[in-house]
Image 1: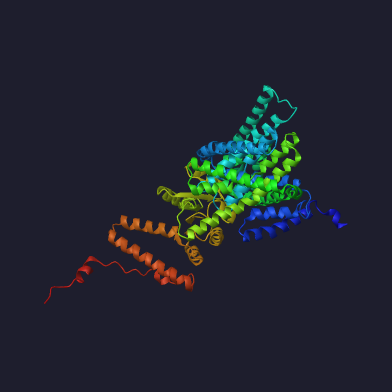
Image 2 (image 1 turned 60 degrees about the horizontal axis):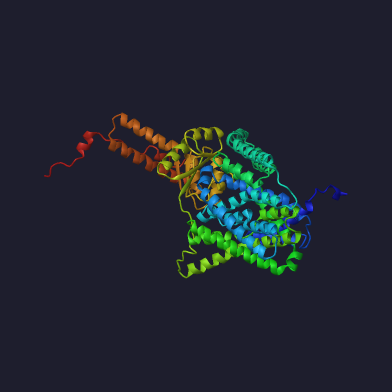
Length: 598
């Protein structure tokens, strides 16, 4: 039978894809964001919903790779210097949030009747927020690079690091198990440090040369395979020594943040990240046990309210004390009040170690999932309050929005022309990003001190990753007319707000660019020829005022000819080529002077 040859999980894949294309657009149309759509789809499909997919945990294991790729992409956007500047937020603000929130929740859990060990696990598990959830919200809103978005990311990063000592705490709390002695601890520490060192060395000294070699093949699928290999290989190495897979991928991304290939890597990874992240949220929705929710509805709802209010209050207070405005503190508080995916990991480990019983773990898991569902609503609530106050003309510092407005320029093509353009722009202090598709040019430009990235200008995802959406001006310095034409179409369609300045290789190209409606185009051969001719006239003894007249006349006639060619074809206006008035002699000029009056 034909059915015998059906690949495994085909039915489940079709169900998941169908649910996604139905639920996500509806959620976004309602203003709830794609995450709520994914969660709702999971709830409906899962074993506690319509039971269309039974293996929710199996889906979750695969979908966790989405979190890994998300952290890899985030790492690509943070070079080591920027990460070092965030150390106060990561180790100061993040540590204070985890410790204070965890101890408070420990007290609440103890009052609720949990044993000391179970209360510690529950308290610190609930102190962790969802990295995947919060970053997805920040990215959808375009606020990951804002001041409050960076502070929120610093807190999330520390929470991801904190899962390692928390898992060690579960082992210590396990009844009837003696911890290993000093030699065992030293061996584990050495193994962990060795894995971190291996990722750092490979990312610093091996990854860039590898991508440089592969870029010469011009095979996109090979570059994509290498990108996945670096991200997943680093994650697996960290997981082998007991660290978070997401942390391994993040570290690899940070080490490649200064690489020439960061924008191409980001564009190649993004489709996989988006697909797996959606699958991750669907799997989280599937894990919501309605029997637990029905039997312990009061405890779950009370837990959601307590977790979100206490965590939100701590987040607001700590960010305010550490220097954030009231507006940014509120936004951090409504972005990170939910429980996180690492809580599932912690609770599962606690069940296996007999620190936490299955029933309490299920109640805690339900609180985490419901708090995730409530987070977009909290964000919408803050937006609604902000909108009302703005409509009333109220300038409340508590709701004031913040946007960065620094002009940037994207230079596409870094040959001799693009390099000179970059030199002029950077001399004025403007921030530029440059991309080129020739590894030899990139290597040469880097030796001269320019940061140039590998990228294909005919790919919209690469242009977006390189910052075309934020650029005030895009300078097209490409030598290939066909490539430039395709790139212009993508820019006009996807990034219409950017000014588009183009280098024209010849007259026909200049006409084509004019028809495409670019904001400015220049023929490099024309300008260099004019400069060459002016220098020749000067060395031949022609006066400067006459040279200026000649230049003005040549430019005027050339523009007239271009205007005629736009409507009448490439050979129109040839009579404008030689129309300059001959230079008159000094004697003739004297004859034209008026004589004495009679």
